[in-house]
Amino acid sequence: MLDAKQFDRHFALLLFDLNNFDEVNDHFGRAMADALLVEVAARLRKSTRESDDIARLEGGEFAIIAPRDIRPDQIRSLAKQIIDVMRAPFLIEGREIYCKASIGIALAPTDGLDANQLLRCVDTALYRAKTRGAGSIQFFSANDDEAAARRHALERDLASALANDQLWLAFQPFLDLGSDRIRGFEALLRWQHPTLGAIPPSEFIPIAEETGLIHGIGHWAAKAACLAAAQLPRDLRVSVNLSAVQLKDKALLDGIVMALAEAGLEPQRLEVEITESVLISDFEDAISLLQSLSFLSVTVALDDFGTGYSSLTYLRKLPLSRLKIDRSFVQDMLTDVDCAAIVRSLIELAHELRIEVTAEGVETPEQLDYLRRVRCDEAQGYLIGKPVRIDDILCIAAKPFGQQLNT
Image (cartoon, helix red, strand yellow):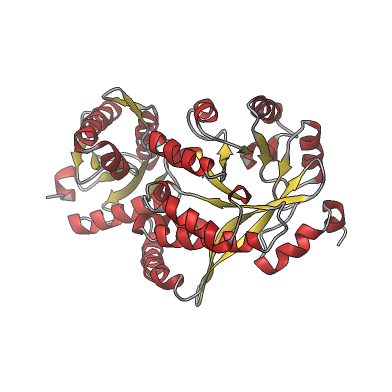
C-alpha cells in the first residue's frame, strides 16, 4: 500500500508511460512486447537511484517512487533523464523499436497522503503530459482537475459531434512558386462545439485517436475532402492528413477508394499526408498501405520533414511525391544560417530524388522570396492564405497570388 508515512511523508511519485506500447503489442505480438518491457525496466533502473522504487503497473506504465526530501528541480532532472534514455531505439529480436514516453509527477504530502488520491493526481498529470506530446513531463497542479474534467466532457461530446454536424473542414491553399497560382488545398479538421466554441485540433484529435473515434471521423473527412475537390478546377488537388491510428485501419484503403468513387474524383487529385512520427512503430505496414495508394495514383506527402527519425530511409523507401519542410526551419531560415542550410539541402536532395517540396509556415514576403531563390516548388502559410471554408476556396483558386494580396 502506498503510504507517505513510510517515506517520511515526503516523496515524489512519477508515472512513466510508453505511449505506443499497445501499438507494439498489436503489431509485433505479446512476446516481443514483453521483451521490450524488460529492456525498458532495465533502462529505468540504470537512470534512477538505488533508493528509488520502481514497479510496473499495467501495459506500458511504470511507477517510480523517489523518497526523501528531493527538490522539484531534482525530480524534473530525474524525469528528463528517464525520457532521454528512452529515445534511443530498442533492439528487440533484430528489430529497431522507437518508444514514445511521457511522465506525470505528483508530490507527497503536497498533492495528498493516501494512495488513491496520489494515484489520481499522478494519472491526471500523466494525461496532461501526453496531450502535450511525446517526451513531455508534467507536475500535477490544482488546475489539472479542471483539465481532466474538460477532457472527459470532450470525449463524451466528440462521440456525437459528427452526427450533430459539428465537425467541418477548413481548406488552406498551396502556392506554386513558379506560376504564382494556387495548386491545391490542405483539408484541416475543425470542431465547433455548441457551448465551448472552437476546439483546437491539438486537443480533440488525440482524444479521437485514443478512443478510436478517429476511424469514423477520418472516413468522413476523406469523403468530404474528395467532394470538395470535385467542385474545383481539375488542375487543383486536395490533401488529407492520416494519423498513426488510421494507418492501422484495415478498412482505410477501401474507404479512400469509396470516397473517390462517390465524389467522381480522379485519384491523382487526392494527396495523403503523413508525418515521420506515425511510421516509427509500423514502418513496413505503412509502406504496404502507401504503395497501394500510390498504385491507385493517389499521391503521398511526408509532412513535418526533418523532425523525426530515419528521414533518409523514408525518402528512399516510401512512394513519395512530395515532402513538406517543417515550419520550424522556415521561420528561422532568414536569421539562422543552419536553418537556411537545412532548407537548401532538403530542397536539393528532394529534387535529386524527383520529389517536389512544399515549405510550411510561410508568413512574410521575405521568406517567400528566399524560397523562390532556392527553387522550392510550393509554399503554404498565412501569407499565402489562412484556412477557409469550402465556399471561399473557389474565389481564392481563381485569382493569381499577387491579386489576392491586393484584395
